[in-house]
Length: 334
Ligand SMILES: [Zn+2]
Image (cartoon, rainbow, N blue to C red; front, side):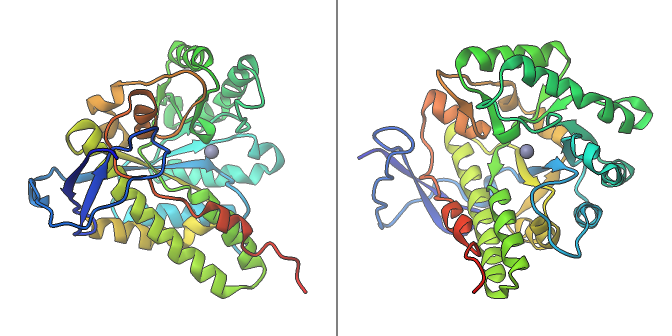
């Protein structure tokens, strides 16, 4: 049995119990005790919950659906960012898509025209599980001409987002990649809120294609619920790990499901007190100057990496409905 403490959640107006599992972080969470709980800080005493939005896999994330172009996906995202006054949303690009479909330059041009910057997400979205460092470095470089060409005045702040948030399969490789990025003038764009929206997108596309509207509704409802759960988890985990609220970086993808849900997503987060900030402002916080590396694979959000490397108190982790999503609408039609 580990140690537990109480914290009032601004997000759900409930009391979370942050427990330290007695073993590794992925050990089963200890039972939650339903007791009368004291609260040491009220929500009004907390700093605002600030979130920078970032979008990965421009200009072609995952499967799309009939009648929805890639350009329309990006336009829906950009319209929501404008109406919610979200500043500086970095879009992280895989330029290989333009080889197969040159018209996909238009979504990237729309992104820049809307005043938002583009970052490097590698050329072909390779996995470090499958390629070596030399090929990985070449893939990063291959993405740069497109980013340079699209940058206003050819000027950009080199900013990198790791595909799969996978930073290395070993301590040595992780450090070598970081050194390489540093030499090329890149800053890393870590994530602190990741609700695996990509897993919802694939199921959404399959169920839409199958005409299964009940399944689509269930996916959308679960998407929203899990997004809000992970917002709350990341906020509570950061407070437990750092002793204060931190500015967060949210990861979503340029996918079909996000085009339809970006408005309700931003509404729901604002209803929980979220204020939108730029990535520059988020990264100015000292927590983003800290990096973590441990033996073996280094992957996940900044909070995951801190927990994996140093341990520390954090709320029980949520279970992602990924396995259920992967099974939805996969049966062949009768
Ligand atoms: Zn990606």
